[in-house]
Amino acid sequence: RRSNSSVIYTGRPPEFPPVKKLNPLNKKRILVSGGAGFVGSHLVDRLMLMGHDVIVVDNYFTGSKTNLMHWFGHPNFEVIRHDVVDPIMLEVDQIYHLACPASPVHYQSNPVKTLKTGFFGTYNMLGLAKRVKARFLLTSTSEVYGDPEEHPQKESYWGHVNCIGPRACYDEGKRVAEALTYSYARQDGVDVRVARIFNTFGPRMNWNDGRVVSNFIVQALKGDDITIYGDGSATRSFQYVHDLVDGLIALMESDYSDPVNLGNPEEYTIKQFADMIVQLVNEHRQRHGDVGKTSTVTYLPAVADDPQKRKPDTTRAKEVLGWAPQWSAVDGLRETVVYFHQIMQQS
Ligand code: NAD
Ligand code: UDP
Image (cartoon, rainbow, N blue to C red; front, top):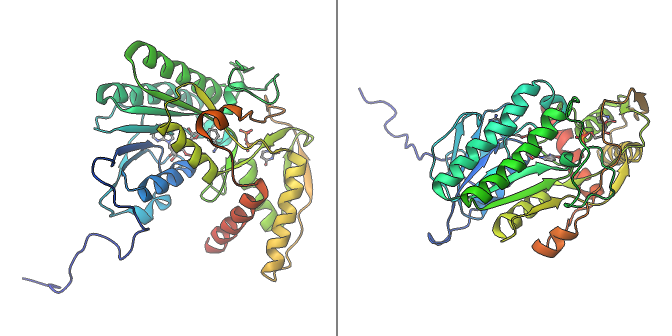
């Protein structure tokens, strides 16, 4: 019996973002591990808009399909539920390897798994790169510098990491991932890139992932106390996610294979940062005619091994990539406040 024969299944929603039509010679097949996460989904957006074929592999530990929904059904896009701790067979030209939880709360919740992801995940992605001769980019971190004794941090600095502390699963996981990356480059000629990413924020961060930007904005929007761990004198330098995506793509497309810092050198103490967020949230509220409660700062015990200062030296990124951040922290935060406000209104 035939029913609903007038319904034509087109296989796609009515509209996708405007994807460039590439000459097939310039079109690459690109794997993004961790592409359902915060940074990964922004990178996927950019690569899709550029007209490439994009394959995401993700186990959805901290990522979500919602971050990629707008591409579901597009012929250039594919997503595979897969844990990078296990091998996978694919044919690709480039690999952006992001799969790894990035927030201290998440990476410390199962430290053995974090180390397995750091080692076996990177090992499997490098093995794939070697087999199919793909270019491989590792998203490493400023955490390889640990609690730094050099300030700002240059790529030449070897770091100061406590290898038995609570952050070691992440820091040492990334350090071994870098060691593996350069071992594959030396031993097997794999074409590698390493980005050392400093604190990055923006829309699609999980509101409850425990990182300072999401915590402070959500607390300020609710009028709750702003929780500073320690005395608020620790520093961080915050980059907006669109700058990071520019840097990752520029690095992948460059011929430079040593590590490159990607971060915004604007440095704030955590107390300054808390005050700035309270002010931005109040301004946002005023624009919406909403007079909520203004948050006050509360001081909680410091967390173990918390790096006391962090600021990238970005000279190398400028010289080899012609890259420098275009967004100030304040401008990026304004957009992020709007995002979190929308998310809170929907839930
Ligand atoms: P995120 O937690 O939002 O994204 C990580 C993604 O990887 C998620 O989608 C998660 O589900 C996936 N994932 C985790 N373990 C996996 C596994 N075993 N197999 C498959 N998928 C897995 O974090 P993010 O902020 O988007 O960070 C992305 C990358 O950038 C990470 O490698 C992180 O270490 C690095 N990085 C981020 C920052 C930052 O400030 N955001 C700073 C330094 C480095
Ligand atoms: N932090 C804080 N309150 C919070 C969350 C974080 O004071 O609610 C501090 C944390 O102790 C650290 C800084 O903010 O000094 C950045 O923390 P985050 O977890 O965002 O990233 P990290 O750079 O430590 O990986």
